[in-house]
Image (cartoon, rainbow, N blue to C red; front, side, top):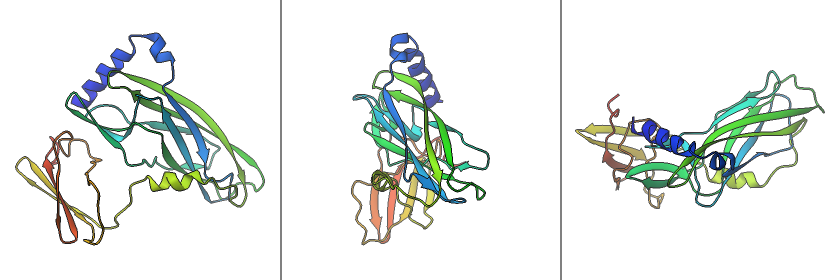
Length: 239
């Protein structure tokens, strides 16, 4: 596949110099929305990502090239971590290939649930490992961040105001199903959105590999309470 091939090309280029690989190009911090969590309750954590100028990280589906981040948690038995929530990415075209990236500071959110039998007043260590790819326009470097924090078991307190901004950067759920249809090599998507809601520079970001041709232009129009997106279908659009 093109995406895998380009990723391997970038990876081989990055492995050519040990000095480049040894230097970290993305600062990663594990932040917590509150300093405590109730037994059986949830708390939101964030991988706060800060790429060096000229470098970028990747969205959950990277597009034609790149790779998504992968988080691994080391928490006490009974604790559960949800999937990563990503902010809306930027678009970057390199060598004719579309990449869904972050060329700025961003945060990946995770919901952590405490077991109902957690002991009030205790302090619980939370450790995480994040494997990710960080790139420039010319090379990519795989990096790993080993980070940790701790949570006190009790009523939520010490709220971090930064999380309001992190949540505003997430895509908003519509709460209604869209539709799509194939017409030869073209895909048309209908997205339910009231005509009263304005949209600035709409773009469709796919989560299914091969659904669309990422680098193809997208045409967006209105039909009453529907946004109509038309673009080139991908190799696996009919699956």
